[in-house]
Amino acid sequence: MVHSVLYGSKERGSFTLVWLMLFIVLFTRCSSGVSEEVCEECNYIEEAFGIIQTEVLNPTHLNLDSLKADLTSRIDTTTTRDSIHIWLHAALQRIHPHSSLIGPAQFTRIIEDPATPEIWGMKLADGRAYVYVGPCAAIDSTNANLYTDSLQKIVVQLYRSDPISWVLDLRENTGGNMYAMIAGLGPFFGEGPLGFDMGKIKEPWYYKQRDTEGKWEYITLSDSIYEFENKLPLECLVSESTGSAGEALAISLLTYPNMRLTGTPTYGFTSGNEMFFLSDSACLNLTTSIMADYRSKPYPNGLRDDVLGWE
Image 1 (cartoon, rainbow, N blue to C red):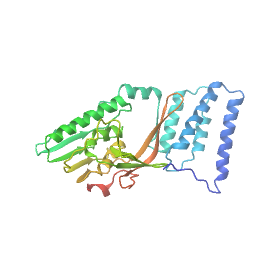
Image 2 (image 1 turned 30 degrees about the horizontal axis):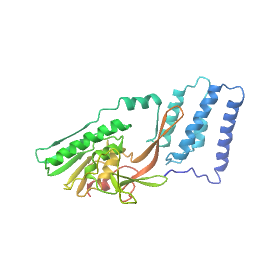
Image 3 (image 1 turned 90 degrees about the horizontal axis):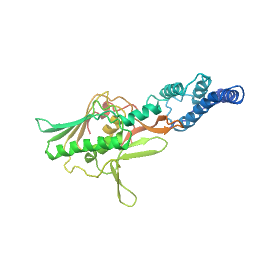
Image 4 (image 1 turned 120 degrees about the horizontal axis):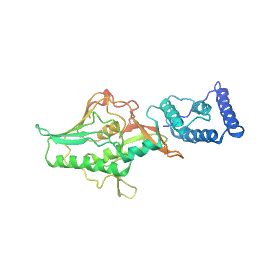
C-alpha cells in the first residue's frame, strides 16, 4: 500500500515551511532573471514528483516535499537533464531501494539489446526433470514472448519424458519480467490467484482464471491454458540471489501441490513495481506494492525460513 506522510501537530509548521520554501524557489527562478532552461528543469522536477508523490511506496515516510525542494534548489544554468536523471534516481533509491529511474537511452538499449535468456533443462540420471530458470530482462512483448515460448517448450518436453519429479532452479533468478516467467511455467499452475500485489488496492496475479461470465482469461504471453495433469512432486531451489520477479515466481509456486522450497532466505525485493513515463521518455520504475501469496500472506522481506520446506 502507498503510505502517505502523516504530520502531527508538531510537524505542521515544518510542512508549511517546506512548501513556502519550494514556492519561493520556483517563483524566484521562473519569474525574473532566470533562464528558460532553469525554469524548464524546475518544471521537470515538479512533473516527476507529481507522479512519485501519488504512486510510490514510501515505507520510511520520507518527507517527499523536502526532497523535491532539495533537488529543485540544486538547479542552475549548468544543470543538464542527465544530471537531473541521476538526482531523481538517487532520490528514488532513498524512498525505496527497489525504485529507480531509467533514462531514455538506457530504456531503448534494454529493448533493442536485451540480455540473452538463461533457461535450459535436462532429465537427470535419477529420473528427475531439472529446469534452470534464469532472469527475464525483457520489457517488450517480442522478447518476453521469446522467453515464455522457450521456457514452456522446455518444461513440456521434459513432462513428456515421464520424469519422477521436478526441480526448478531459481537460485540465480534476480528478477525481471514476472509475467513472462509465470507464462513460461504456466503448465504448473491451476486456476485462480497465484499471489497478490498489496498496494492501493489488492490486485491478484494469475496464469488463468474465469471472468464473471465464466470465460477463461489468461496471461496474454501464453498461447494456451494447458496444465499438467500429473502433479509430480516439485522442489523449487532459491537463494539469497533470488530476487524481485524471481521471488514472485517462487511465491506463485506455493500454489502447486506437493512442493518444497529449498535453499536460503531470498534477497527481499518482494515488492511490485510499475512504470511511469515522463515527458522526455525517461521511465520512473516505482515500487507501488508488497507481494503476498495466494492466501494473502504478505512477504515484505522476502521468503524466509518459515516457508522453506514442504508446503
